[in-house]
Image (cartoon, rainbow, N blue to C red; front, side, top):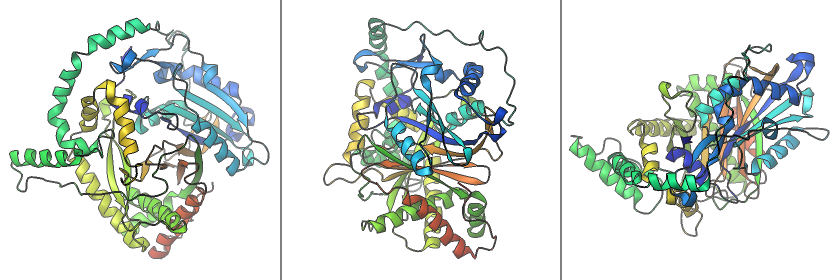
Length: 499
């Protein structure tokens, strides 16, 4: 048995009737490179059977501690059935992008079954140009962006011929005995005395950083305590002004996608040219991530203007950051922290918006580097397991109440992907669009994954809050065109990659 960390447990805790905790992706493939020019469900099952011994999270099932006395455990599922998790469907003709996005929205709206390992895979036929898609869902309690990329590295190959694997039947675990409720209750009771010790060990590193914890961020008094203790600690360490990097007092305005979400999602996707983004980065002396965030800002600004709700203050974005070390590769679970950064939605000029984004991201990174790498992990350890779920949900819902501002407005995440062609079951990957999580108070998520010469955007929102979500893809393209115009289009790179 393997106990979840406090941070992993947070991603279970956020779930409710309207909030899901899984992440995934929509991978589009060209099966022309596969044997016989097609990929069947049996091909996908065979590929997974060969590699299951390298993918332990696919066999982990939750074992919960009664009454929430302690964090849950992962066990090797003694009743694991691969065929339950791998499914097949087809789009009705004509099978266009709108139909595909709608199908993805339906699938991602459904919760994963906690009585089984927390993942699903869908093989989808009927796409344009004879393409197929593979949609994956995996609970965030199992993986973060980096560990998800490690799993992708096992599932994908560098050539259509694939790789040779040994006979894995003898390598594959046969599962663990599922513990009974009484046994798990006993584990929880035995672990109770350890909880105060864990909290005491975490206190010195936790209190100065209360304002980076998803379950504490925004709780009345948390920011003041954090600032005061951070200043006192730096004074004790000899800092001249008592606070090396003062955290800015940022407050998120309220928009229509910052209320309580429903159980229904909307999804849209599209691609932009990576060479075009790199040309802008080079011209203005910024980073690729700066350009990506500025493009997202421009698209969201256009949407807000079209709906007559552009706030005077800039929106705030939550930006996940990996703190996984080389030694922690292959450990799965979550090793992440977060940055909160302003989006210059109040800036009409695209170049000024990009430069403000550059400064905001630099300041956020400087503040983040000043934090201990384990700060977020320690803070979640500080929260007793019995109130973890309640604390997480209360914190998210605070900004949805009348008269209160949200903690942040939108999640923006940029994940680097492979620059070379990769394959699954012999089929060549064409695009890989991320599918992520929204919550109460933050009903918009923009996640970007680079692959070869393009950036693949996957955008998730609440169905009723943003019914016209696909216009954000047009907004991204318009924002890119504005920056290319400002740079003089000297490089002559194409506006968008083929979607």
